[in-house]
Image: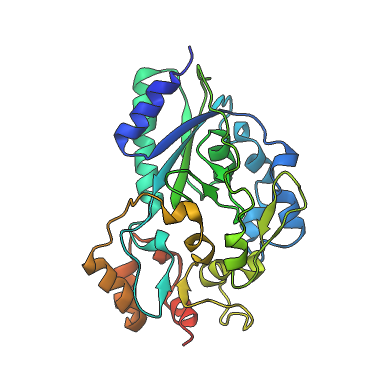
Length: 301
């Protein structure tokens, strides 16, 4: 029995996803993903968890035995407004924790698939698992890998969360990757204040992000008491959107998150929050990835 690709896409959209595509589950060709080269260059900084499960990252059939199909989904997050003031937070962190929302919707999609195809087995994944979200989204025809290394979708830009279901049935049709839509544009490269977007050793890939130079890495992943003085945060206390703000696709991306005045005020008041207030305001938010001492450090205090 083959999966009905069109039915899956219609079901995913009805559940609330913004886009859905399918790709055949197979090992990623070494020439198409530069993970091992990135690790060898030390560009993952101290994200040592990226050194784990490398074989699984390249091969989804090691994550789900008997896997035949990767179903990729997107949720857009472009907000209706930006934070005001000197302290900035990356836009993806304005709202709820996307891991919770994506996982919930993916389980609902998996349940719908199980009802229609009782013999199907599968697992949902969000970016905490050893799987290349961006590669599979590209393979599923949901966008292309931009020069800032993020997935760029024609409608959502790079303002999108990615998830996938890896399942054990083949589909009656798979999607075709979209052509590169960046052309000769290099706005994201020029906008990075730390020149963190660097050439990849693999020509087919194009670019990598050197985490050692990246403000987003330092404000979120770096657990040191002090940040390197040469790293420019550009006002960001969590993450960084410098390379995204200038992308032509993002300038016209559809709004997917309504930033209420109340939430905007809550976010802006975090710069003066005590630890208890910070914990309460960041619960069930991407901001809970950092602790209060890191927040103070990022603010320069």
